Length: 63
Ligand SMILES: [Zn+2]
Image 1 (spheres, rainbow, N blue to C red):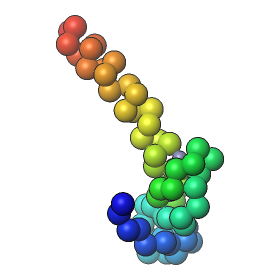
Image 2: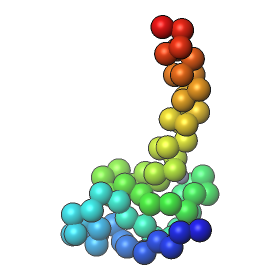
Image 3: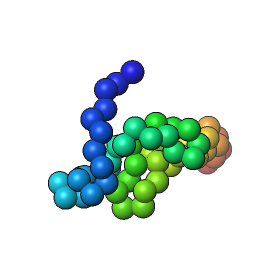
Image 4: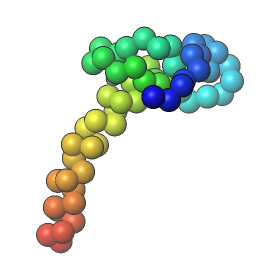
């Protein structure tokens, strides 16, 4: 498990960072960084892309 430094959204924003991390799980239970811009958990944003990857590969293969 990687060690993450906790940083509040306002602090991340002040430092010009795109992500912040509070250690608090999101609504889906991910303890992950969140986007400063929209407060969304990076894991929640990543999951749909991973689910789509095999499908995209198939489409590419057919073409
Ligand atoms: Zn999440």
